[in-house]
Structure formats: C-alpha cells, structure tokens
Length: 183
Figure (tube, rainbow, N blue to C red):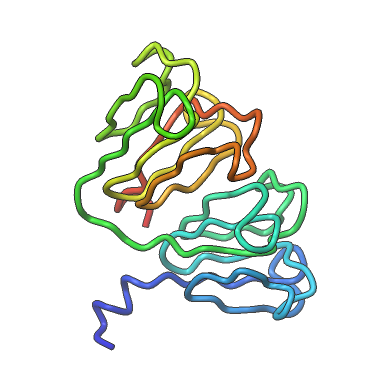
C-alpha cells in the first residue's frame, strides 16, 4: 500500500486501564466487540483518523467521537461504562447532503442540509427529527442544540426510524459534518 493510502487510514490503541496502562489492543478498522482482545477498556490514544467508540458491543449504546489525541480516562470523556466497540470514520472530501424529517419513515416536514446546523428549531422551526437520509458525507447528530449532549454517527444511508434503532425518546436537535479538520 502506498504512503498516501496509509495516511488515510485511522489507528487507535485501546488500553485496559486508565492512563494508558495494562494490556493494549491496536485497531485500524471497525471492531464490533473488543472483549475478545481486552477484558475492559478505560483509556485510548488516537494516532490518526477519527473513530466513534461505543459503550456496548455491536456499535450500540452511547457513542463518543474521537479524533487524534490522548484520552487517559473514559470517565473524563463522559462515558459511564468502558469502551466495548469502535467504528473507524473514513476520510471524506466530497460534498455533504442530508435530509432530515420530522416523522418516522421520511414523513412530515423535510429539510435538506448541506452544512452544519446548530439548532433545527431556530433554523427550520422543526421541533423533532425522527428519520433522515444521508446522501453524501458523514455526520454527527446531537440531542441538544449547539452540538451538545449525546451523539449519533450517521454515514450514507437511509434511517427510517431512530426509535427502531434504539433511540426512543431522544430528540436530535443539531447536526454537524465530520470534515477534514477533524482528522
């Protein structure tokens, strides 16, 4: 593989204990269940790329966005439980486009986003987002305005029901593109 191809890949190292102690596991792609490599994961170091880490196996539970840097204590990252799975976010340099819908199954009011939206209520007078279609790019959705609260990683695809995805009762109020500056 060429050097340019290698620079596009992500690399994250997980450690069993806080402060990068204990056994480690080096990962350069998606990992649906880290228990086969580590009994627990309480710190990590992102050497390149961006990742979403999850507090449950199979990319479930609370999600956390990780960019290049050191994360010495999972509790300081806002996690309640240790890291159980991770997904590498591929670098993307094209245009961004996502349609958000007020109701499940692409129903109700629809708005198309091509840039970040810090508050769907202020911008679109939309008080709920229950489904979306990501046409281009990779996005983060947040439960509160101004990119705060719990988040959800969205890659290209159709998401007909956030409730069916395990997010019942959650309201998604802001959306942000995952851009080159994150890498």
